[in-house]
Image (cartoon, rainbow, N blue to C red; front, side):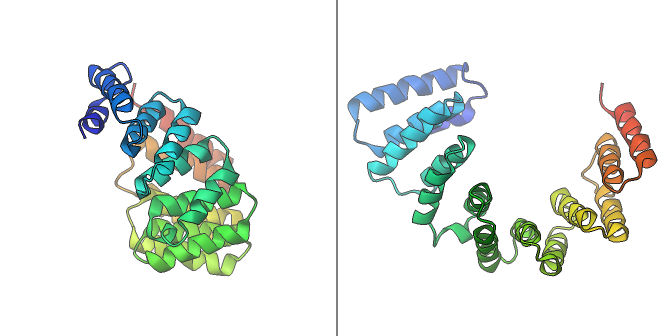
Length: 239
């Protein structure tokens, strides 16, 4: 627990707290080489150092030694995805199949792995199960909309995107997804309405709002409005 606390306190790998955590983990590995937590801690340290392959190997060793915590599986699958080892990530996700829909991070990883494995139908199935298990999660609806759109089920995709905006009316991500969907679908009037709603989000700073509008108008083919807003974004950007 002390090592986890020290790692959480660290901002860089050169912080005294991080270096102390490394030393304590090394001692643990010498004293308790068969303890799964030893390798979990090694994985966290290696991941922080950006040694992703070694970190993945440490998490795998923790699992081999009997660790079955969802957190360990999630860290391992995330690293395998970043390493583009999609087939291995898929095998671990299949081991967790009944739990994946209950977890937002695991659902997103499962969808992403299926897309990378060129399995669009499986990606949509994973996203649909996530919505069924987490019907109040706006990101679950957003991902389901994206997977329906990818499978060319546009009529089903639109209400999924709209459900996401209803559940999280102040979330920039869901409005951006709805706008992008309308833009790609050629529904320019609806896209413009979604863009205006997105730009009106109170969480956006003035320069972010101008940049979002610039991107939006560029997608809609309005070069003049896009340039005007890009220039405004540069003017308003913090110096």
